[in-house]
Image (tube, one colour):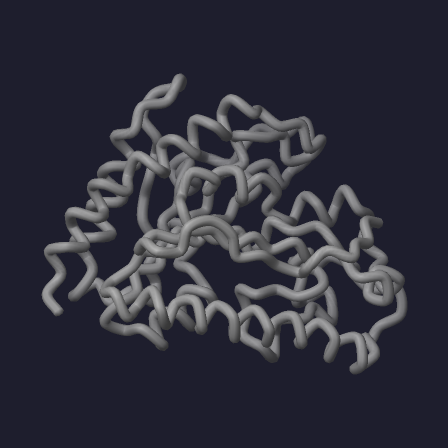
Length: 266
């Protein structure tokens, strides 16, 4: 199981603009003391993480990269739910060798959580001083849960891109969300237009809610769940060409979203 001395997260790129991409479930690292308590097989853990979401956001100027696994600390849950303590917290998976977790281990994970949100707030305070801003909160989701040889879940309920706007002030920022959805759906890919729909499977969670609460008249957080058609969720095999297409498609929305953002009344 990977153990690393690198930082838990990084804020990279050019933060002088108003567009940010986050990949807070991209990480796979686990600190050594916590790794010793995990019973979940590494392929099973990887399947529930969001690998390559950092690459989908790679063309956005300002980026947040989370290197720690969500199985150590989940930045997209409330603080008291951020460390998975049982199978109910983790989709029924048996994740721990000897539950319950020692509270010292939990405290170590929450130090990462607190450090992240403290730095996230410091960064966004400066961004918000300049005006409204957009966060592409990038995730991915499995659609072949019935097994490696099973067909994918029905497309009617599983869009290629689910745009979560559950905590967004749509009265103020609805036109911005619409501009994003329309421009991403219109982006050309080798397999045709993208199926982009709002709040079908997911509505966004803690990162969006925290940010909207702190910057109610500034923040537009779009929780983007990309269906894992860019990889085989069972083997981990990646379609690099598809990831590059998705990265270009996401970046192509910026001019349209920026135009709509300028029209928001302050």
